[in-house]
Length: 257
Image (tube, rainbow, N blue to C red):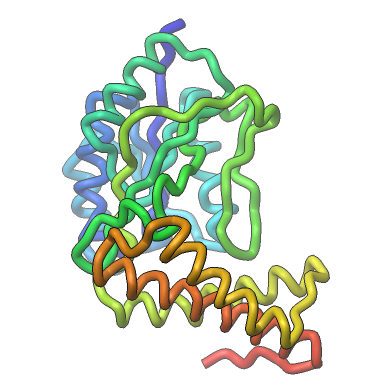
């Protein structure tokens, strides 16, 4: 069964990456919907160079914004990308094959992450699978405090496609450090809401295991110096998450900067 696909992207000040994302969708999707959170840079100007539907909508959360974008689509078959992602040539061919013979409720894409000058092929970062191609009647973005995701109604009726979704994750260590503080706070809040408990043992054990697993078991050492740095930061973010969760358990209040 040949289908028509709507490409959807959410943006906020993405002038650096958005054109790359849009261009990678051309020839695959039958329309592109961009939902923007009132960018102040050239995002809108760049998008309007292409035949896209550009909609401005107030940002509430990533899950809300992504579901809103999906709702604006003309077609039920959705390819949902972040502005800093792009489709590789091999993945493009895989999606075109699916488009001409759609069989599953949703499809997993293997995300290859660019980290401070290197594509990480190990280090617990690959294949980093995400559902990004789906039938919106049978799958949807699930809203979470952190790391929103697409979930299929029937997880067994899914398939992983060949090819990579190219993601620019962090271009500098400074950027990574800033994001670690932000995301570990959200993760601690999310765990606290779900009554997950921290302890002094977890504060010690979890980071050590995170490093060992990513650097040795997941072969992070094969990613060179960037692999080492990433795995160290991975352990550090695990440490911060459980320290912050421990603080919340003991009545500490998160203060905004």
